[in-house]
Image (cartoon, rainbow, N blue to C red; front, side, top):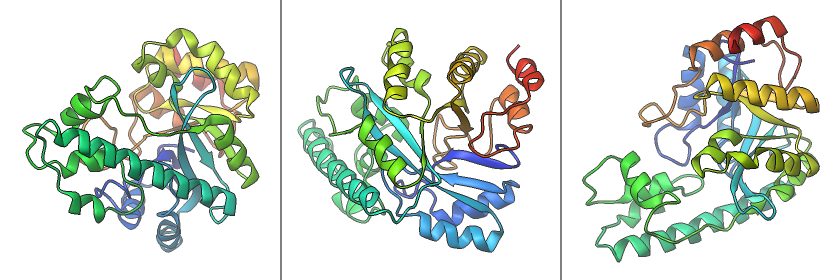
Length: 294
C-alpha cells in the first residue's frame, strides 16, 4: 500500500504553487509508486488532471481530500481524510465551495492584520493561486519578510501567533457524513501530532471515541514523522476497535521545510509499509508489526 506500492495521504501542493498534479504524478512514477491518493486540503480541483496523468503513467489514483474540521465541544482542529469517494458528488462539491470561501475570508482578515504590523503583501500572488488559498500562500505573498516561509508561518500564522484570527471550520461529523454519502471512507489524519501540538494528548480517548461515534472509519496510524510509541498507540487503538489503518508521507512539495518527501518515511515505518498489500485495509502481518515497533 505504501512505499513502492502506494502513498496514501499525499498533498499535490496544488494550492501551494510548489507542485501541480501532473508534476506530482510524474514524481510518483519516478519513485516507483503504483497506487497514489492525493488529499489536498478542502478541494478536489486537482484530481481530474491527476487522473489523466495517472492513466498515462499507469498509476492507480484513489480520489482523496483532507477536510479541515473541529470536533464537538473541544474546538480542536482535526483533519479528516476522505478516500475513494465520487469526486463529482454534488454535496461534497458544495462543501468544498464553502471551504474555498472560508479560506478566502480568513486570508483576507489575516493579510489585513499583517499589514497593521507593517508587513507588506503582494495580493496579486494570491489572486493567481490555483485551488484553495492556504496559509502557505499568505507566507509566500509577503514581500518584506526576512526569514523562511516556514519560520514566518510559525511566527505569524500558527495558533500561538499574535494574530487572533480563526477560520470557520466544518464539524467533523459533517465531513464524515459527506464523505460517506459520496461513497468514500473517512479517516482521521495524524491525531497524535495534532493533540501534541496543542498539549492535549490526554484527550486522545475522548477525541477518538467522539470521532468513532460520528462514524469515522479509521485513523492514520503510520504518519511519516511518527515515533515508535505513536505508531504502537494508534495501531492498538485501531486493532481494538476494528478500524481501518492508513499511512502516508504527507508530502507538501519538494522544497517544503519540515516535510517528508514523496514515499519517504522513518526507517521502521518504511519496512512496515513495504509489507502492506491492501488498500484501506486493516489486515497486517503481525510479525512485521511487532518487529517494526519493538
